[in-house]
Image (cartoon, rainbow, N blue to C red):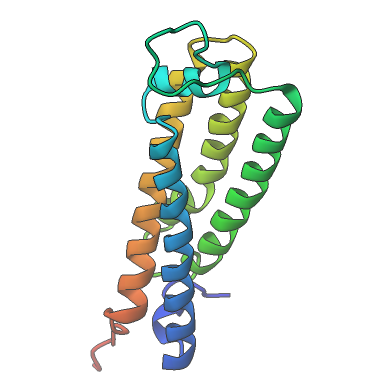
Length: 169
């Protein structure tokens, strides 16, 4: 079955439906990133402090306490499930985009590895594996870059790109 560029051939109503879905999905994703900014987990030290606490620092502006096992398992469980679903839906749309096959499958598959690296890394940071905070930071950034790239491609192809026509011989 030929599915490459199928996105370009969809009726206007379906393109509109998918476009508004991707916009709303993006609002949810970026709201989550705003929360990450609020918790100051955008640096390796912030990641570590968020899960291990800072109660030993008398100069801390905001007192943070080490997360318990139940809280950590809840955070990891809910984030892996929900973010996997976000990338499953976005990848399900992206699979029909007009893209080179290797790029398309990188954009579709890589986020699932980043999800595991990010939230598995958070668990290992909590368990005391200090260097994992760098894995969490890099994989989280990569996941976000891929999200932005995928959303941009999908919205561009849904709203602006036209079907390529072949010249008659």
